[in-house]
Image (cartoon, rainbow, N blue to C red):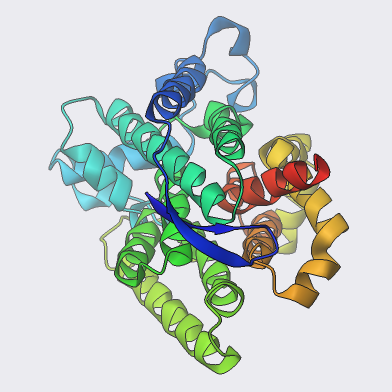
Length: 347
């Protein structure tokens, strides 16, 4: 693995070879898998029964997972499109991948999702090296990714968010390392996974200016192109057939805001989803943001990505069933900010 040796002020020094600590990363990967087991396939372990799924039996109260299971069954030819519902049918990547696995639909979805999170874990490690942090920080970042509340609570319950999150980490690394073909492919794949992947686009725009030193005009042009591609992909997903009763697009309402705003679980899941990485990221922003703006620091795009995720979570209060999955989209950005904060404070 090659990287630029950079400090957190964005000064580029020499290119060095780096051999990843494979054994440590494999162990952390196994740790991540272990973290998902208490809720795997919604078969909650006894201490969790009555706490998850709003107090209902998670095996019977499938929530969003019911629709993704139907997507898998449709790809397998077991049901017709009348059983599908938008917007769940408009997130085809994970169900498509799951449909070829020899497991029951929910298990196949979770195998795909956990695999995506493991891949994302490795990219988080490499992202932290790209911003100039130490190997130890990289391993701590991978560990924070693995033991987070969202991985435990949402990582293996039949949802498609893990695939989108894992692809976000891969896309963040691709943008930082100027792998533009991979960036384009990941943009398309991520939006086929779930539209919340769009938070990567603001990160891209900021990275073009601060990391890759594009002019503002050129960076804006490429950001507009990426946005247009993203919107086109999301429109393409609307062509997937679905039965009546679904919702196409995110429609905001005061009723949704009141319902989410008065539901304690919405706020608790947001805070738990924000987690330690989010709190450390806030610490970095509060302490070093002004200095970073003056120096066009390498970490500024991560601030932009984090703020985009916060905005997405806020919009979810207006337009969806708000929970910790929306702020989870910020982990590829909050973990680098948080570890940079800890390393700098330790100097």
